Length: 330
Length: 161
Image (cartoon, rainbow over all chains, first blue to last red; front, side, top):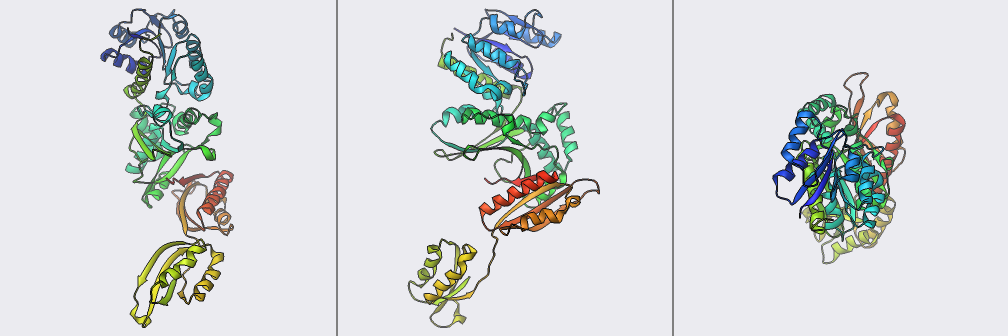
């Protein structure tokens, strides 16, 4: 028996998930999809090539009389896959979708940072009370399986500290400033041209995106209860190329580093001087994380922090975890 | 410091014991059979870390054991860190920025390189700070964060991991 998915969001992440599910035999079917303007439902499983073609040709995935809320409340599914864009301040409408699905006793997998950074404890205990899973691997560091690793695989450890490069756009800009001697403006424009940076790059370059990931890590891995305001945030938008040259004189460079030291209440994201041969100095849009633990020692993770298939990898990992744990579905 | 001791068994240990007894950290011992020092005498150079206020009594203890202290080269501030500041450093009283660290007595700015691309552009500066201990360095960085807030500088600290 196939596990039934309802997918909210047909942006690059949503399409990456749908494509992967159609190409691999994972024992999953998609019974409902909604984008921002329409939705479609088929209890026997949607025709995926048809769906993707419809989305590409018309810009919408289905019937404009069906919306995401209808899908959550009325479609037949076992797992809600919530991959709509993040609203960092309100977490909506994603939080409502997730709440409704959990109330109905459905599992939820999300890549959306808003609901997890703002309401993790409430959502997680609701899921627990209803005997379902709430999973969010894709919210931090894209393809790197950091949440599962820290919360479960390293479960017996005390995780003493974490340092990470958590925003690929900023890392790309800093890499180009260091290696090609570009100004901040030039590097940012290049990142935009290549699609690494949004038209409005504020969210990335001011450090908000990476800081939200620190909030998620603090609240989930260490069970803290912090918000974005508790993170000391400095972005890269005021960096000068001269500063990078000064760092180079001492065989170092500058990278935007997130830092969590729970025992000292340190939650910080800021540009740091870092030796050029340090393992966190990764190139281009890569992400990197180092954790220090009491049993396992130091561990380093490097990988792609964003991208359609990279994010899909994390989402599908969560889905398959649920499949294996609850073989057969609801 | 350079010590002169009798070239007989146990003398080196006798010289090093008071250092570790007083909580000093022995970083290296350079053992040289210095022929010019004369028969039966050994000279040894040791590099140690010890709180400055204990230095005098360490020398006394060594002398009590018959060890001659030939030379002491003192580097008071052994902990070194460099930071980068970006902002209108010159127009916000650069002297005061440096003084705020130097006044502490436990840390000082020992080197500065400035890069000033154009008159109205922000200056980028690298400060090398030395301090007595690692904790003092943390305090110095704390002061510098406060200065950066007041004067609207971007402070880039080193990552220590």
